[in-house]
Image (cartoon, rainbow, N blue to C red):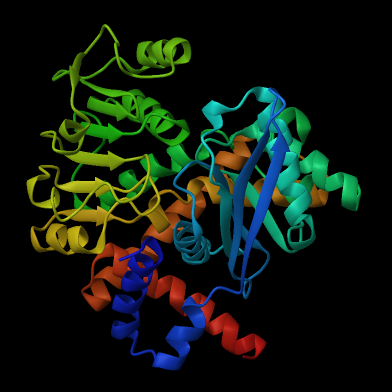
Length: 410
């Protein structure tokens, strides 16, 4: 299956439980708009660099479309379609007034100088500025993009449309970003887990063992919050290597190490292990927090964690998901678990429109409320329908999007 087909597999699994017609299914899975653009820039060495950019707008029924931009060599049409549709369902799960979109550029940003990266970002905005906007489609950071890139997007868009801070979220706080946005996804991941642990009678984070694949924005913040709560993160991996320590890794010291070296590899407070060893570690909770498709039919049978906490987008393939469900492993799905980022992006957008900033305490309190309410809704569906958390999440999301579609008029 392509990445988009995998998302639609989960969609149709829920649709069968809901007894949706084939016509309604097709309408809800079909993207509203797909844009592919040439992004050519002058490189610092005088040569011409040509890259391909994408913006897939999946659904706008419940509000402006929302979703990140990633700069990564893997970006292609199918990946963007999949991630855009996941955003539609994710925003519906946490009941935000948004639809879903996603996109990015097929590029390795590490191969570019800072000036080339800025030119690439601005050129991309020049190509898509007429299809994004505060009331149309609001990008945000994703893999290999950050607040600085969001600032360039805001600035370039504003050249065409006037001052428009609400066109993009995840901006620096000094440039109308929201307090608490940087750590929001990781914070939401841990709150999602705490809701499940309490509901299932499994106690607290303290004393439990964790393996985390990915130590970027989401993974590093999740590790910090787990560590603060007394969890033991015993294995961590990133694109350059992986480390482990049976008694738990010193996360604050590791954060300092990564700030200097840009990788967990070589951290003196742990031993080097394989990246596959992170996924197969003997832990209570596995947290995939990097790219998609890392838990597959080939390794799902060997995963020892009893809980998979999907901090990444689409980390588990359908075949692997079926294996884990058959083994009794609880998978808390991405469209709920990592929704903290888009939730606080919504708060940032609302602040920009109101031209009024919130204190961080309010941001965090509102995020916690959204995660609690979303979990409570999913848990009720899990129990009433006797389905997995992933299927429950899709049932909730499809129901909300479907009702809005009918009410607005097909």
